[in-house]
Image (cartoon, rainbow, N blue to C red; front, side, top):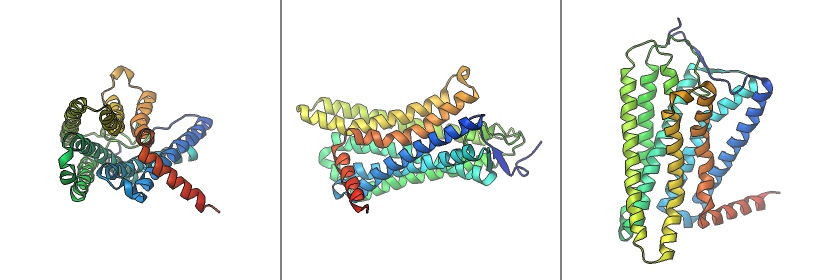
Length: 311
C-alpha cells in the first residue's frame, strides 16, 4: 500500500468517460469560466474606477468579486486542462495548493458576506451613526479580518489534512481536491484532529449564519416601520442582492455537505460540487447588477470606454 511519502500525484475524478464528452465539458466549462471572469472583472473595474461607488457597500462588493475570481480560478482551469488533455493527474503539491486556495477563498467569502450583512444593518437600523461606524478605516479593518480568517482557516485545515499518512491509494473521487476526499485516503485513526477542526469551522460558520439571520430580522423590522413606501423600496433594493447571494452560497454549501446518503453517487457528487464551487462565483455579478442602477450605469461607462479605445 502506498503511503503519503511515496505519493507524487493524485488522480482526480474525470468529468466524462468518452473523448467527445470531455471536449464538450471543456468548452462548457470554458464558457462558464469566461462569463465569471467577465462579470466579476467588470464589477471590480466599475467599483474601482467610479468615484461614486467608493462607499462601504461597494467596497465590500469589490472584495467579494475578487474572492469569486479567486474561488472559480482555483478549480475550473485544472478541470478544463484535464478534460482537454484527457488526463486525471494533479501533483501532490498542486493538490495541496488547490485545497488551500479553495478553502481560503470560500472561508473569506463567507466571512465577508457576514460583514456585508452588518453593513446593511448599520445603514438601515442606525443610519445616523453609519458614517462613524463604517468609516474607511473600519471597512478596511473588517475586510482584512475576513481575508485573514480565510487564510487562518485554510492554513490549519491544509496542514492538518496533508500531515495524515495516506495509504488508501491516490484516487480522489472529486474533480478537485477537497478535505473529505483526501481524508478517505488516510490509513490513520488519528484524523480526530481534522474532524475537530471541521467541527470548529462548522460551528464558526453556523455562528456567522446566525449573525446574518439576526441582522436581517432586525433590518426587516426596521424597514416595515418606515412610513414611506419609497424608503421601504430603496431599503429592500439594497438588501435583496446581498440576501440572494447569501442564500445561494448557503443553500449550495448545505446541500453539498448534508445531502442524504441515498443521493450519493459519483455523478451526483460531481454535480453537487460543480453547484457549490462554480454557480455562486458566476451568478453573483448578475445578482448584484440586475437591480442596482449605480452598478448598471458604471458598467455602461466602462463598456463605452472600452469600445471607444478599440481601434
